[in-house]
Image (cartoon, rainbow, N blue to C red; front, side):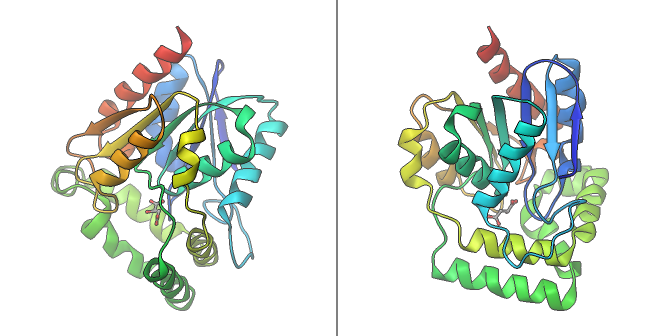
Length: 256
Ligand code: MLT
């Protein structure tokens, strides 16, 4: 499993979204290292530099990969921070391996499972990406993924996101779509989550609604919600400084 692993101190594991890779956490890696954290950012199954011929990359399998990586790195327990698809993996990880999770950070999360329309749409996307490659997926960057503020003012972020999408292996993307299409409904898991939890939402997220974040906050007792202005679905890249500030505030509370 390809990964970044830098720094020393309490471990935080960053789980990327779809169809992206570990490079989306660049600003968090540097920032958290300089604040005394060991940061591990893997490429999830079939994505980033990880090749895979699997037809379906299921969320529990991705979570098992992360637990195995923790074993290899001799990390007993870590803060798990996921973004979007990374949150599905985080939900599976805390469900399967509760003792390995010290705290959760859920960025742009959704708890509900897929309905029939979502399943059909994901299968259609999987087939399209296998037939045509990733090019068509670039459109979603301007229609859904990024805030208008980012589209107007941050060409470097647009370039990075475009490159991540285009560099994704179509087979990995199709497998992850199919994995997300068969994911569980995590709504019932929420009341069992007892670790400190921070939810981070982009105010202009075109993929998630404010209700998605509110639902999770109501479900996880004691959880906190931070909403970042001028940010969309990729809030950690779009507003890295604000995001890092919110994140370190939460982490400092854990460590003091
Ligand atoms: C992501 O950013 O990981 C995706 O939007 C997840 C999804 O399609 O549900």
